[in-house]
Length: 332
Length: 247
Image (spheres, each protein chain N blue to C red):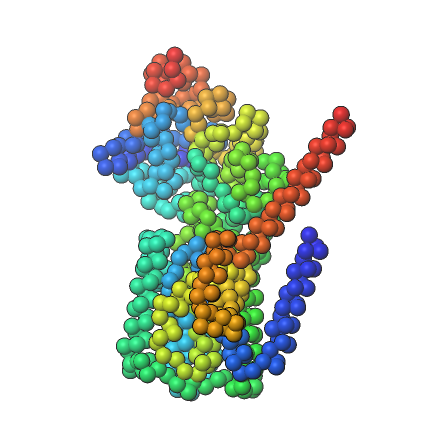
């Protein structure tokens, strides 16, 4: 047990050190892709909370990334600091996410997916048509990158570190959340809402909270996305972003803490890597790889690991039982 | 003795079918009331009406003299009314210990204090005691989904007791449990009833189990109360024999 703990700790330290040290020599494009991975991981973690832990389907996570991105773009081009835009985006996404949770109290599964899909479309139309606020299809350009504790993040490497640090903070908060009684209540909500209700779990409030908190992370992701690309228009925040985020959660392993990290890696990094080898066919190869993975393991990449560990534990337990049995028999 | 639960003329209809048809009874503090009757006589619907899972079409439910008709199940649970279900209802992915902690955590503090407080909500000791009490010690860390059916039944019952309830409604606790484990379950229920003055209402088809566990038995047929009284009286009641027990 403890050796497993040390192993996990060691892997974690190596991974974090790697994420800090290895990209130092990356070119501009490599750093952009890696920053994008960190930003998308934050949004996917939010969806993993709503969908993976609390079991509420949402096809609107991309819209919250959009809300965060537009909040940051509009305010920072007006001269606000990014941190103020972040605070406002968090409040806004919490409130809107909370309200989007209300339909989930009435409808579930595919029906809920459709309600959230409608919301996603609605937000896209707001981004595109409300030109007075969003500058419509022309988008918002010259989005500044922030100064953090006096350090400019204009260059790709410092901005990547900002994204990575944000991912670190979000991960720590998420770790705390899912280990708290709330995490247990979210899981109960997913596995058996009726029973949870009979045990005093206010399923209504936890459902709304799952939506609100998941949406907040979508917003946080968007607040970083705007200064990353430094130009936004409505197109990146249409339904396909929501579907991409959903795929990240499912491919990585819904309901696993590390699922979004892997899912975002596959969704953001794999196509880029494949492009170098398979040229024009890279998206096809990518699509087939995803289909193959989900046929092999419907619970995602971490589902494979989970099955392997469970099988090993079961084997160890039955070996113990067999040993105890034979001791009993020899004693007789 | 005062009544913990008072049910007054409760009715529940689904379309043209009246599943519960004007049921009234009291459950006194500290007693174990058995609820028997043929399948489809309205026992589970009555439970659901008492527990807020269904809203009665008419009538009133009182807990400790307070009208609770229309409260949500989670609110009732925090007032000290707990239940088990006819079909297994544990959280398969959570460990046995986490199932029990979950069953107790919403009974203390506020939502905020639960978020920032300890991750076990200070309930690990209480959960371990309950695990020991129901003889599930070696399984504490296992996911509940990996337990045998009988063990899950025990866990299901244990969860109903985590919040320290005054009144527990058990829907067929003995269904599908083997005779050895059934004896265990009966001992545990009797012990909790005696030590904590918890009051039970038990739906059950296993006559031997009901008659030996309960202080009073209520018989339902076609949505109505057919008879209510001590086990011996019920066993000898001609109407009950006709409708349910058989000759």
